[in-house]
Length: 218
Ligand code: B16
Ligand code: MG
Image (cartoon, rainbow, N blue to C red):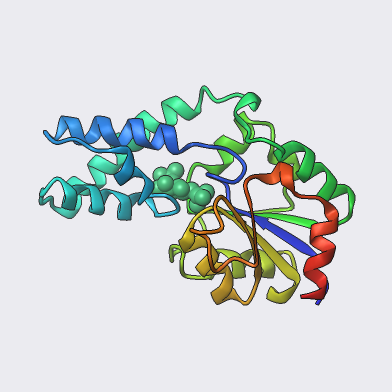
């Protein structure tokens, strides 16, 4: 089936905001009296804010009421937003602007499929907003990846069938979401890790429109 739309994850595919999430979560953990490592941060990629907080509190062996959790998640987000508010277009990952331009010029529809509630600010700060026909993010979906909701909603809003959409994802949970949506996927990262993706590349600079045409035949 011919690919008509490309659905991009944000963090880890177009930009790298993991470093800012790490700094903000570490500051929160430290104020609660325990530490938080980069290895633990890896496990939070693609996971929603409140699920991330629940994991961190588990690691720190802390119990909090729902009200306290909301206040802690808000505190972390305030620190995080202060950092991403300083982002510049220079922080866009290798090959992103070039590939998005080629995809758009070739006539494909482009959608965002992210767990983040801050995607609008990140796209704005990095000058990427104009590429997108539709933005589906943590503000409009209720179920986190690996649930396919975020990508199915993207295809629906772009008026294409799931089989006509191609997902670009760096997280295992995101590739699983694409598979559950019935979509082909390009994994961004390592083939040993993203074993369920249709194709895996190191970053968007390795891709051309010819790769999208190859997907039509699969
Ligand atoms: P926020 P993605 C995800 O973005 C991040 O990978 C994940 O670490 C974060 O917790 C999640 O967004 C929610 O972000 O706190 O800004 O709403 O990879 O789905 O683009
Ligand atoms: Mg990601």
